[in-house]
Image (cartoon, rainbow, N blue to C red):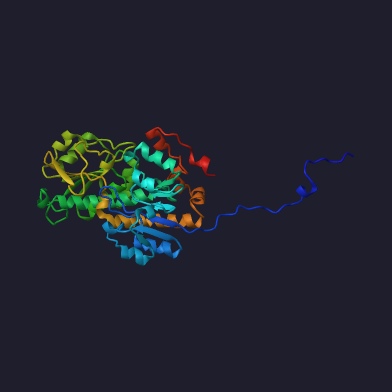
Length: 399
């Protein structure tokens, strides 16, 4: 009988101990929060309470002096929470993790050290090709918080800010209707014996839902328009009461606009908001009516919309008051800062518990969804298509 041959030695054939992956130990984060320099940006990423929670877990926070002043947070508040406050901008930007609301400017990227983790908004429509080239030369890992998904597959940052924008739009409109603001002197309230104010909302997303909640709560008569029947069903269920809904048919929409006192535009497109209300339709609206184009940051869905600022928020066209600020949540910077901070804090603690951004991205698909630069390599297809830059799939770089 021939002897069995094997390429393995006797030692190799013996049972071996199982080797398991050694996870990185929990790391301590060193986070820099610079003051926002973008035009009329008043929000801040972390509130003093959030800073206190991070410091309790052993992390260091370095914050630029007066960074939270516009949101009503003083340097003393942050210092008492455990943060280090400095006037040196370069020192803040030299931290291994940078937190910002708005994306950094080209000048600010120059101050960032190579291999830094940057967490901020991306705002692809306002960026230039040079911005991404600078990030690549610095080999920066960048996360856009508006693209980060949660366990339910939604975008928590976008939803939180949309909730603020929706609620704020009705509160702003109610003030613009007053005689002091050249409105037609209507109160957005259900006064006995007085016909209710008519509100038209175009778009049944988060902004539309919260605008409808606020308007109904004040006693207004609300009409919601959207081309998605699923969204219209969802908004009916969310509001918990029957409300007028319709698909976007020009004849029906024009009839509603002629009668309304407030029109709110909250429709987002893929690259730009579709123009759903023409100039001729606006001309037929009541004198003194109010238009709030919340989707102006995507181009606006009213043909007559023009971008305005917080200093001069309104203009009048065809006797209709237009309010077209692209950044409504910044008007309520303290509330918006709390909302952003509530999103950032758990993710920062998770990054620390996982032993750094590398492991956090590997294990959290939602966090990976927000990644658009990984060590200087572009990983976002939408950025690649928009600017014609080469990109690599994040799944091929991180596994």
